[in-house]
Image 1 (cartoon, helix red, strand yellow):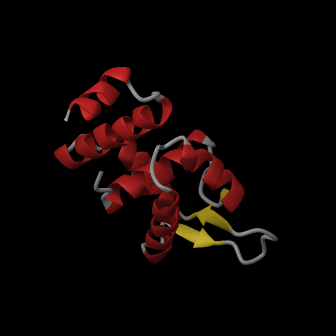
Image 2 (spheres, one colour):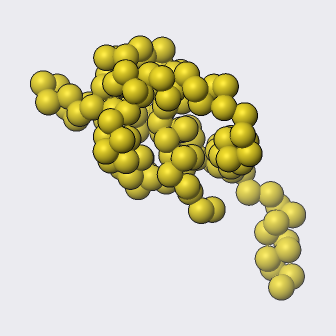
Length: 120
């Protein structure tokens, strides 16, 4: 699956929304990693997402935190709320791909799929 930057952004901001973090609210790396696993995306995608969101000033690094942490900026809070109401084609495609990634993560491999591989 090709993961687009907008999908990663949607996934990270979705974590902040699910954790009910307002502007200035921060999440540590362990919390982000735990929640990221639920997204079905690769661990490396989280690092890329955090870097991208810091560059876009949607998240700010917390220098005072004992563990790496990121704080939701005012721009990030606006983006988080606008994602909820964004119904364009790109938003729909990102939502569908993230849903597919989550489902792939929780579903065991189908025995039918295994038989198809063995037949070929």
